Length: 127
Image (cartoon, rainbow, N blue to C red; front, side, top):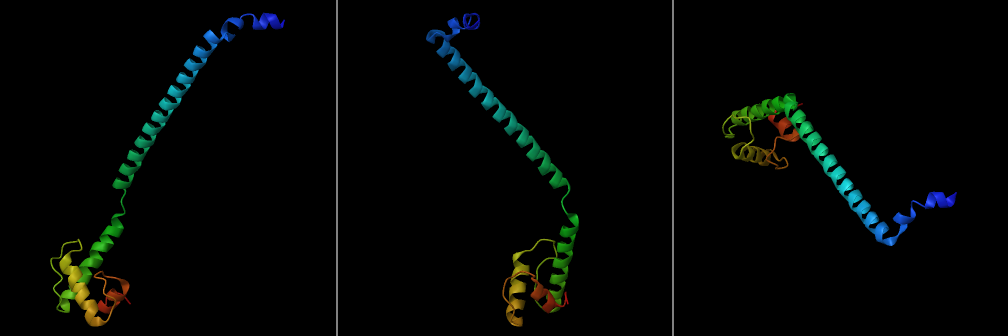
């Protein structure tokens, strides 16, 4: 019974046949693992790009609008007090930062050049 099972395998078990078969199987296994890794990487990159597009399309516009409104209010309050805050565009610039630093120095606040809560309170924008 065992001879019947081992009989056809005797040809394969010989070292001349067995080791090249084993090497071929190892090469195919490594190739399969590499292909699987590349496929997973491609899928991961596509998923990452899809998420980036989603987040780019769904940015929090409310927070940006609040920031722009607060910055305009800070510039207006600085101009009322005689500090040249620069143009009223929505981005923070060096003119606004320098006006904030001057105001903070004169008020005895921590000099940051940013409209932090203490500065906003001193400008009368927050309670």
